[in-house]
Image 1 (tube, helix red, strand yellow):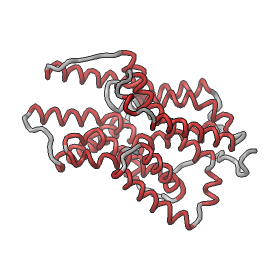
Image 2 (cartoon, one colour; image 1 turned 180 degrees about the vertical axis):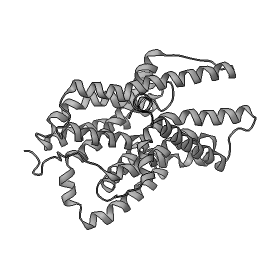
Image 3 (tube, rainbow, N blue to C red; image 1 turned 60 degrees about the horizontal axis):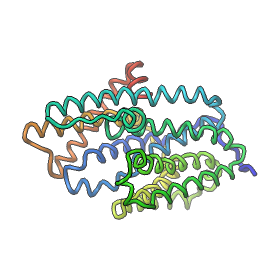
Image 4 (spheres, rainbow, N blue to C red; image 1 turned 180 degrees about the horizontal axis):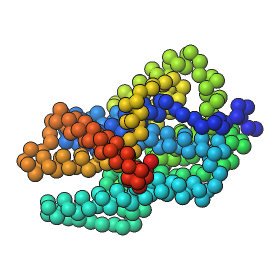
Length: 334
């Protein structure tokens, strides 16, 4: 039996996404820049939601295109997503690879290269795995979303089954993951959790009208409070499951309550992918430069300062590059 209220067919513009994207981008920079101080590392649990929320947003929007009937062809979808995700992935992999090689020569450090792992799955920098991971997920879920709108209840059941199976895998045999080969480790640590994040985004789209009709005054009060409590809970229980719960509640607040309209926040949001792609250059460049100068980054305030500076420089770089249509298309994925 199909859902009583039809899936949203018109293009959705969610103002809340403009607010959460730059915040999540900052959290990503924090995750990769926090290791030089004990306290910034302890606070890192508050940021574990960042990449999962990016994936959930991507799949909410993807579902709105496919299940909403605006994206019909698999070939068109695959071609467009390949250009937006995989071409920037290859370009940035080569850029970071060149930087890594130059650093290894200068610092007289070993340099290892695994072409299959690097050019199909993980890239040459810690954040680049997101792009091929997202591309492969789009390929997998496109056929599902093409038929999901015909029977939303079955679609909901399918996605909930995916979530349960993924969570069982995440919770099982965690000790053995570190001993596994790189491909198994990649699937367990990156791809399987992404299934949960993607499912959250799709579930919210498929049930958008139903949730909206029930999102009364009580929900408007309780949802932000619960989201805040779950955000803090990530500090005391830094586990992906808690982050997924946080995202599940946060999404309702972002979709139905946040109405922020600010040009600067919109610019930050538009450059969130650019910040994500570029920040490794500035983080590693600043830390390596200070290390060579015999002033390695240490202490809470210096570490936070490096994170903030790397974020701002990444935003400025992305903003400048995005003004050129070619750079925006092939480097920024926009």
